[in-house]
Image 1 (cartoon, rainbow, N blue to C red):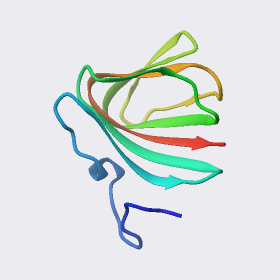
Image 2: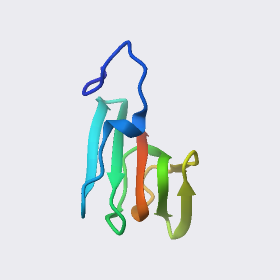
Image 3: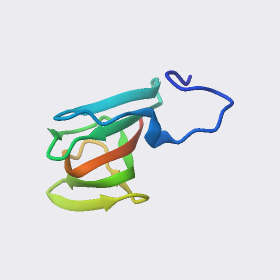
Image 4: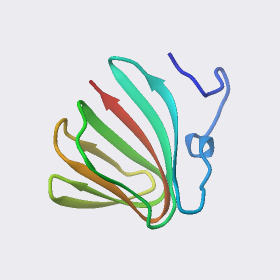
Length: 107
């Protein structure tokens, strides 16, 4: 079920991806018909443009600050904050500064 991650060891999710200048970096930890879990890093000013998901998407900011636009509403989230983006509602993600997040999508 889990991939790209050491099992039976203590770790910090934010340490699983590094920042890269001018890029969004991702590492998928789980991908199946029920759930997807991915860790992302965003360089300042980088974004994932507006799209919709086939499942409810829950993001938790692990480090830094990101801006999330969901159905026209704007949310600025910092480390430790979580937001659920409902299925089929258009959303976008923008790096207000360098930041890392965990994304869990349940289908």
